[in-house]
Image 1 (cartoon, helix red, strand yellow):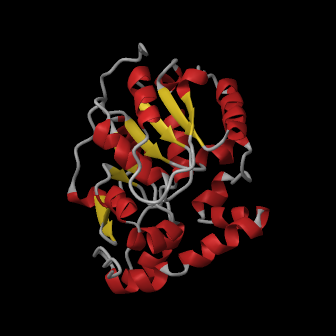
Image 2 (cartoon, one colour):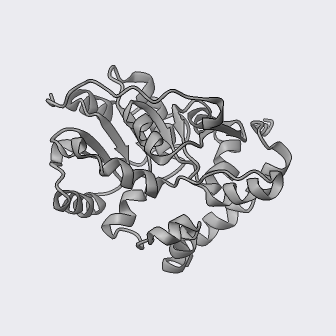
Length: 265
């Protein structure tokens, strides 16, 4: 069992202005520092992408439940933020998954052994990510990593992963796997873990730092251009994803704050 202290910081007090509901998801629109404190206080943290909001929110009940019951949802989708401003005239701050993971990993207390448990998408990504983390001073070992299997659609209950997390007792569980999957996994973990770690569904954010995906400069992330860097680096892989994100425009125009209706049948 890890010796990481089990105490969690108390999230800062909330005001109604700290949140904005978009498509039935209660997004946090306070500062990134406050978002980081909330993430480390425990619970399910999601950063839904444009394609996730456009497609999975409507068609995947488990993904839908994860987003609408999340303890913290951040405005990762620059496309959503731009559309919201266009349709309503209201400006929302954008807090990307990349911005949040940078802020989380800047916390020195997370460098201690056992503080963070990583769910990685592959052995190659694990090797690359761990090498980078160790170079940044993180005491991450094989005990702190789980290679995710292929998960089927629907709710996810991974007994082996659950046992590993319970045995390690981390403060943070970092799910570095694909969007649409990590949220369903995080939902299942939150329901069954006896502790209350922060379960951060930040997907490929770590890969932008370690070289697994094309590096996104801070300025590009700030100006909502991360998608362009990804598309240019691998158009065959990403074109369909961003094509699907176009569906968000009519969805947001129709539903605004309301949760979109699920398809019948």
